[in-house]
Length: 361
Image 1 (tube, rainbow, N blue to C red):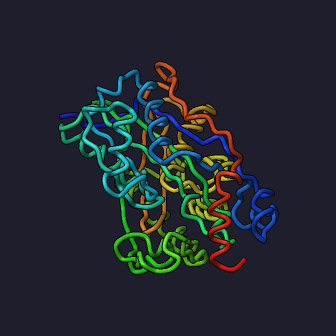
Image 2 (image 1 turned 60 degrees about the horizontal axis):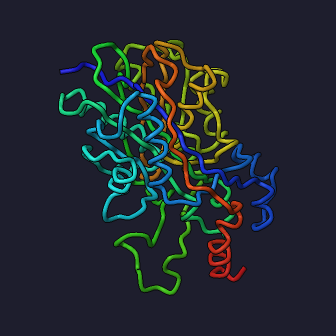
């Protein structure tokens, strides 16, 4: 059986419609300065297509980067908390759209920690010898859930997808160690109520969603939770902070990331940070940031990359990923989203009118 599961392909997909802070300020009571000072976000992407379309494009790009064909994939995991449908899984939609007809598929919902959870699961399944070519995708369309009368949450989130391909290897590469956890006692701090079988589908405002979000509690637990998980995985490998070449954290809030870096005593130059461009894309944020770090030349053969996340649940996760020898895709992919003819505000127009109308704004 193989000892490791190497990352051999990677890809991302960001929808083209950009919603700036100025756009935000045109529909809710906020400003560019208010948003940037509290979150570090300047703009975010808004999807005009279902989350499975984002996932499929990212997945096909990752498969091409690995030099593979969709039919060769035997495992497909989609990390998402914004599924196309509950029945069937989003992964089934992605399999159909990618043509990955030979893959076992399932969704994994661990909120913003979903990509590390999924990477850990896929790595274990490959190391057990049962699978040879796995695609792990983090894909979200969080803007679909937002209530545009709730300023504190509406400004934070964006849409996107990122993916990696894993293949067996005897080289010491891939996810070398990971640790996962959850603080379910505080799950109400980040909650989407009235969506699912615990909700009341006969209430007057069913379908008018709003993310329940306790920013202060999440900030406090996020820094402590991620730092704790990081300490565990470094100890597992006998590594120290100085042995890490790049930290790729979940992009939830620039202040959280800066506080984590301070607690770890590392300079922000060693941290991947792209929240200013995309906002919080939940399970998609780490794979997107990982792909962009590669594109920017921040990853080299043998780099030790620290992944850390905290999300709804309240889940937490960390892992150490060692990069292999290859830094460039084996071939490009023609995969693209359908054309988008609307602006971000036009895409969200009905949702803005509906949610603000329900609040009498």
